[in-house]
Length: 106
Image (tube, rainbow, N blue to C red; front, side, top):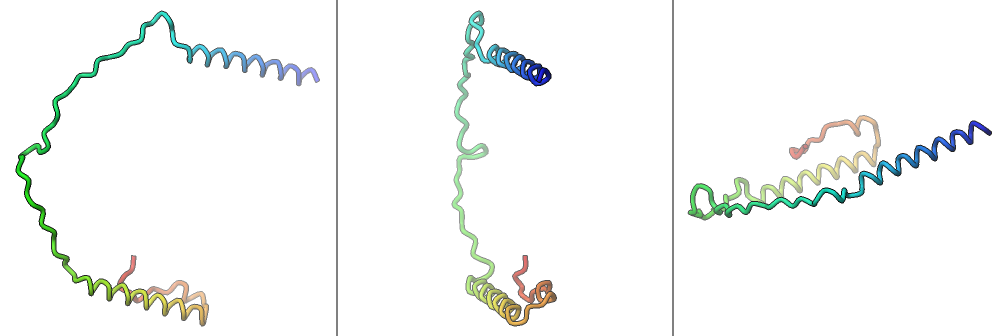
């Protein structure tokens, strides 16, 4: 019982010291005036560093037609659906680890 009371007293004393330390740090010192440095105003940087000439941006034509890309995606989806259906029909460990034949592989 005495050890419990001694530990409780030491804990309360430590808590009081910590509260005093944190309270002293949080309080502003009344002797020191607050310092507000002046912010130097810089002139605005021009919009273009090298030149003010704005060149028109031409969009690049796609290298591959969009129809070809859509066809590749559809083919990939068909292959993945066929692989899923074959796994549902005959689930084996080998089908889980086989490589896909699709060209769209990560």
